Length: 515
Image 1 (cartoon, one colour):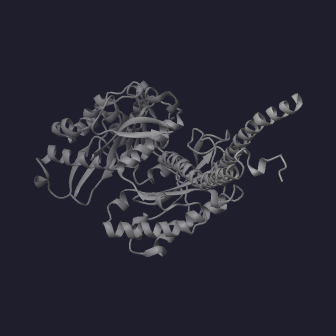
Image 2 (cartoon, helix red, strand yellow):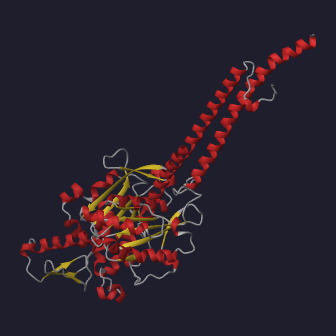
Image 3 (cartoon, one colour):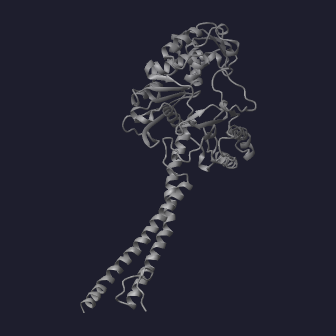
């Protein structure tokens, strides 16, 4: 009897306990399977979309391309820039096309200025010429790139970006749209990795931002935040462009995110302050001083110009006046200052903006025209401004045909570099009040590097969102399947309980044999 009671008591309490454990175990198994499948789906979508931890270039370290091609469609030509991943596998750098030792048809090296891989004229001249017109500008560059990068991976993994600037901005809306549609079709069939949004017309402000990003990236300034970055000056033919970090809030500032860090950046373009426009301004200023304005100037009149070398003459056909060189550094500075009225300087001039500049002590990187002066006179880029001014002054004080070689005189702008050297000093020393320790001249802005960095960082951020969405989409059917399984389990359990109220286990977990 005691044995029978003990057996019944054991049976009475054992089954519910085991049945409850069976139900919990069944649900736990379903949850575990769904969780593991979810991890597989997430990782699968992530790797398929180029997943991985983004490095400080903005690329996913596991899927970063070895090269990025950036096409700059400027006013005078269409240039190909090569951005290459560094030996450390992390950083990006702009490299010269000459490193690849692949010739480019029709290329003639330049002694001064930039040796660029380009086709001429500017691509905006192909507006209305359809795809074939655009191909005439792009195909030579694309064919060169395929040959040069052979052996550097599949071209389909090499991104190609295109940015059209001033020339395309001047086109009418219909011509702009037609031109860019042709550009996108040509690049889509190029064999390189391309997306339609990677070809666009950019504003002058964007060019300034690209240059600022490129310059600070090359100097390693972004690691220190706003306290480490430097400001930038770019001297062009028609305008002077300044890109600088602003202190505090500024209505005209742009928030620029570079490699995960945000910067308040302001870009100002001073139209009329470029090298060519400024020189023209000195001509009219000198004419005004000589003859009371253009109306009093007689044809073929000779005017001495203190910014030109002795023995060099400049004779613009538009006004029929001959300007003969009579170089004097101080007189040239006064001519430059006089060419820009006091009201012009106070209202929109270069001198006014410096008070709002942040960055490291208000320091600047000087590019483009500033570099061309150093290059023409053969000056080391590390030479301080004051010493550079002294050396160029010595050359410019001599006669044009005595101080310059035949090859140097063949440069179509050779006679204007004495003016440009003085004008550069006026901008940096007179208007901005910068000393030798506050400005450094660099070879080129290489804004293509900045464009590649920003574009690829945005692409990586967008790619992360796409991967998350894809993973969520993959999890949805798994979640639905789990709910169905749980529902079937509950249905089966309730049915089992209805047939035998004492049974708590599900059929698939049952270990007891019942008749």
